[in-house]
Image (cartoon, rainbow, N blue to C red):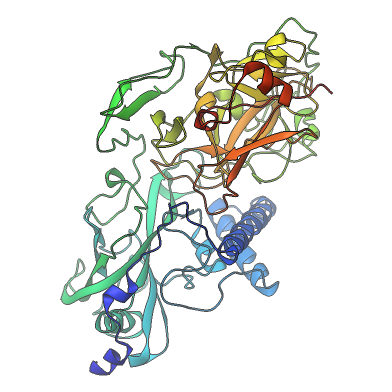
Length: 563
């Protein structure tokens, strides 16, 4: 095995020195690659969902239909040359950041993070010239993750948990095991992907109601290896891997348990960061299903200015055309081709079986079933009107004022919250001239009759900051009336959002032809263009005497135009 030392590189040379959270200028190539990765993921998810809808009607076991759809989508994209990062490589993969989370293992193949369909160890080269490129840490082997960044990883082979028909046998120093051994001698980096599990309340086809996702945890080096008797009495390899320094955390300490299964909390008890204290236990005062706390650094004693918390939009005395007759579906609108609400969505459901957006980047208007429909409250087409289902908290950011972050994992496509306030008519004088720095005004859209004023009355949505690379998108949802000029502004996750991550959306999602004023953007994303645009009239700024100071970044300000 000494010949493998010819690969020798000192571990320090592989130290992860790139600070992904810094606001330093990132090359255009890096930004472009990340966009390509995101595009490949979007294509894969849309295609696999479409195939799943086709297969499940003819497949008695829905899990098999799902696996078939994922495999078929992977093969189709390969044939169309839509994969990214197809060549195997050591170190980080272009366009993928530590902490990125993925819904399915097949996605790891499509983007080149891990190119093995089943095996947990991926490698390049052969025999003594092989080196491990990545490993997937699953619950099927006796793997142990320590909160200190140390991983005890069991080698490949001889495990009947993988195949029931295979009898336990001693593991051999070959293929993936040999590649990890060579990586230890060479000091080369290994990408680590963690399998995380969570309670799945909707997908009944999954055994034990558990679904899995995958999170990229960064680069590790193989520090040591031993050969011991495993859980089935056979000899197994135990590789000790240690995380390289200066890498961002992909999961919070509370989400990493020192056991062989990496389990997400089913109901998070909160992410308590160091040097932070809870100032308000529930800013909604019990109006939301889950409490929304306010946390600040120990040295910061101020709290958000008081406002009336709302869980429903309030409208002025203007004519709103109410919905006529709703759908007559008696089966939760899943298979009803005659559903009038589904017909308004182009004949297809906007949500999948997990109550997530089918394609978060498409569909502008979404029609949900409402009070005039005969379907039950558990209808698959009633998602955003059911309120907040994730634990959120308001916190003090370093440079953006107040912000909102999640205390639990939010899957891609999930509904997060509504932007709620008082609908103000465009003729209101406050919108025209008396805007103040502490006002929260949200544009309904170019075709809207007014704007949402969350200054005196609103919800947690008023605190969500802007980002040039947001993890939320705004959708116009209709369910309680038919006036398209007054839609509900709903926020959905455009990607998997780990616990502890700040929530953000693009303030310029409602674009209108108007003069804009720009200022410095502090979102710190890879795609940040350095400026944030606030749509407003120059006249408004002159009358109020406001300057483009840092306080503007901490509030949501959209001044709509008169159509």
